[in-house]
Amino acid sequence: MGRISDNFRRIKDSIPDDVQLVAATKSRSADEIKEVIDAGADVIGENYTHPEAVRKHRELGEYADRVRWELIGHLQKNDINKALPIFDRVQTVESLSKAEHIDKRVERAGKEITPVLIEINSGREEAKYGLAPDKDALEEIVEGMRKLEHLRLDGLMTMGPFTGDPEDARPYFEVARELYEYGKTLVDGKDRMEVLSMGMTNSYRVAIEEGANMIRVGTAIFGERD
Image (cartoon, rainbow, N blue to C red; front, side, top):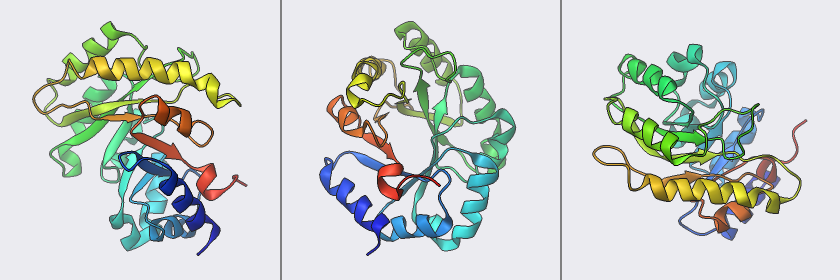
């Protein structure tokens, strides 16, 4: 098998069975994505809807239907109509306003429900999107999303500040996990709090130690980007 396949299987074998490994395919070619799917990847994470995810989805053909697609990058309002037919879940809902905009367009995309995660700005970074890591803010958005007919809340996602030392990310993952546990007390009906998506190539091991049950790994699978 190829390098990508070997990398994917090595990481997959090293993590707990209940942790979902998302192959983060930003800037990767269709052939690279096909290799990781053949290696057993069943979830693909893309950062950009248009033109990248739209083009890849078309180029992959039947391979695109073999996996779930997760939007792990920021969703622009003007890309919602393009995103919904492609992505099985949007991980980056940073506000009630964004949730409302998505909800209005779900039926137009031929769907009844779109699952989403609330993105938490665990480092309170001004340059990043995400909900403030605050219980009151989380309660407000969960309450508001409960009224949206075509969205289902599945959990939380965070990026955390990027640093060279994975240990530096631990406090931010702790914050997200505490909000995740609190979020479980807020959901009912169609909503749930089952997914905690956090950790990337340099930090996924720490993220798992702090409670992540979904990690988003690109470079460790595919190698450095050109």
